[in-house]
Amino acid sequence: MTKSDQGVEKSANRYKAVPRTLSFITHGDEVLLLRGAPTKRIWPNQYNGVGGHVEADEDVYTSAVREMREETGLDVADVRLRGILNIDAGQETGIIVFVFTAQARGRDVYPSPEGALEWVKQDHIAELNLVEDLPVLLPRVLAMRPDGSPFFARYHYDEHERLVITFEIHQDDLLADWELAGEGESVKPII
Image 1 (cartoon, helix red, strand yellow):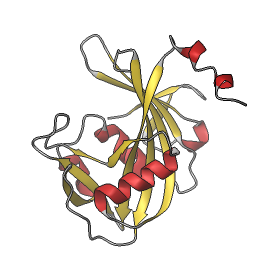
Image 2 (cartoon, one colour):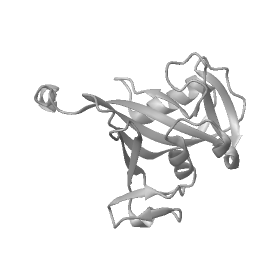
Image 3 (cartoon, helix red, strand yellow):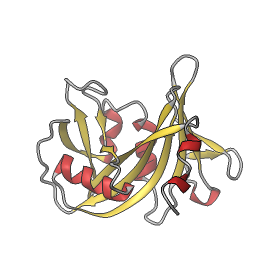
Image 4 (spheres, one colour):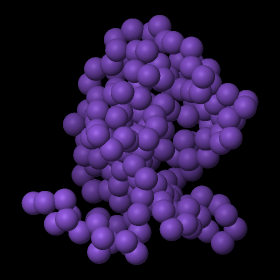
């Protein structure tokens, strides 16, 4: 197949998305979160995972590992794709986020210009000033079985600019704290 056979020109008026990665690194019962620098344009002083844009010359796995190393300095193992988010912000171009988990081989992190890296006990996550979607997303990601299938989610905004999250999962991957609307249908978190 040639480059022109990919059909990019014919897709010029279709929905486009910028690929990004978001990773949650664990060590024992702690997860590494990044508290955004107060000078950041988006999410200042809010906690999030680590990640960034996928470059043209890399696959999403390589991007996730690169971002984890660049932003934390950690050597990680057991890197797993946990889910894919399609984020429709009401613009011509959206965002596709590939969500990963990994286990840190150690705890010593580099200082980051992105903000302060902090190890947080998983049972203290709810006490933090999290990025808007993390109270729903992070507990789900951290509770996934090691062999669990990736989830698929759509983020969009309602008429009042509130974030709406819809997960598509299979009944056999359902955890006890999620309500199934019907096999293969949308689920909404019980929060």
